[in-house]
Length: 607
Ligand SMILES: Cc1cc2nc3c(=O)[nH]c(=O)nc-3n(C[C@H](O)[C@H](O)[C@H](O)COP(=O)(O)O)c2cc1C
Ligand code: SF4
Image (tube, rainbow, N blue to C red; front, top):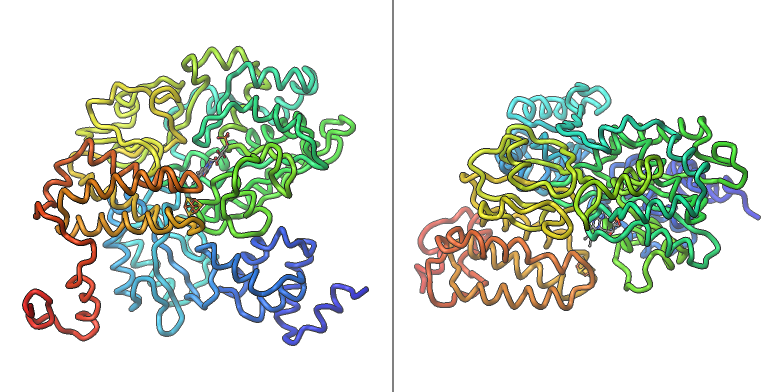
């Protein structure tokens, strides 16, 4: 049997072998940790060096092509060198509203680099990324995976200076990286003063089956969007046959405009981990995972510290709270920039070290999840709420909110309002109430539940946040009358086209066609004919897509056409059909490259 060190010694480039050895050892040479290893390799080299891939392939005994297949799926992993400083500007509509486009141009000019490219000297690369979950304190960017918020022209100047001088990130001013919680309204969950270990003590006193009954009595529904009954999910998983059961906390929080899980993980991590541990006891799991989106890399050390503290307090590990056989621990896996990994089956694939492609369902994760074993996947907020229920009882919880939406919901409020941040309300709160509380004026629209959610017009502000009226995973983006709702919808459509994982053709092609159509409308080449085309695309995406991303991709366009039609009509310069492909526009890049913009370089003039 060849020892690990001998295996490394046989590797042709000892430096890479010796750098990778501790990474491989830390992950026990487990292929399921491939994504984690790739992230760490990239943190070390700045990109996935081909020799590092060869080394991983040899050591893990998997083909290179498989590793490259995984790497190319995630937008934060690079097979080609990027800049020493990799800057990614958050591309959400709220960042745009706060001036991110001009700030990115400023940085590109100051550092002599084109957007999307690497500077000739390899110092810096600048590009965009989907919403980084900092909408309450944008505009935001990531530099080498760490978030910097509240960007201003002055801050951009300072960042450029630091980059030019090659100052290591660890020596940048601390305030650049400070991220506020902005908790504006607390209710039962955020205001509970939860004591670490209290819910587990209640569980052990009451009994496992009885605690499950409390969760069921509470009528708690998942906070990740779909609203499935948490008690039923745990019960199905508990009853499912398997060699191991698993608990997974979905902290991928990629829906544009959502950032409440970021705050829960920062300020209420104990309560979230306690909820996972309760679930473990109920379903019989010994292992759990927190899948943390790559954009929240800055939370990793804090979360590891909370886990360690819980181990020391006997709230994790063997014989939790002295109860023989109650063994459970939690591992953190970092994502790498793929929104679709928030979909639970894609998340499980990613946890297994693969591309995050959604699985066929059924079977569902409760019977066939992580490593094909029974697995509960719940949102961060769902676990935090379940701790409270174990402590205070199901009936107490069910009495809050509405008949079909029990308890409270945490909203991530951003956009045109005086006090963006986190607001917790009992279900049933009206849109108007939230707008009044956050200091919104002259509101034209609210996008509830992110890009895949609902666009609510003023006539509907009396509607309620609840599963039976306006369901939401948490985003609440406010737009006043100065905003162009067509551009809001166009931003979301670009998001879906960028984030489509490409697995199924209707979504891969459909989201791209939708993006082309919106871009064509933006250039003034649209006609009423396009509305019919969008409706046809919607039917295709709804009926033929493999997962929720494709199903929801047309929502923002259909909603804004129905409610903000003038924003589209003013762009309709033609009544007759205009093809989506605009040859003159397509030639604009060639004109730019050749430095020509005379009449002869334009199609119309030569016809
Ligand atoms: C494209 C897509 C992205 C999703 N992103 C998230 C996410 O970031 N966080 C989350 O909790 N659920 C997300 N979901 C829902 C999950 O698939 C799943 O329903 C949820 O994690 C279950 O937890 P819950 O029952 O506590 O809501 C997403 C679903 C889809 C289709
Ligand atoms: S619908 Fe889109 S995101 Fe979902 S699996 Fe298909 S291609 Fe991927």
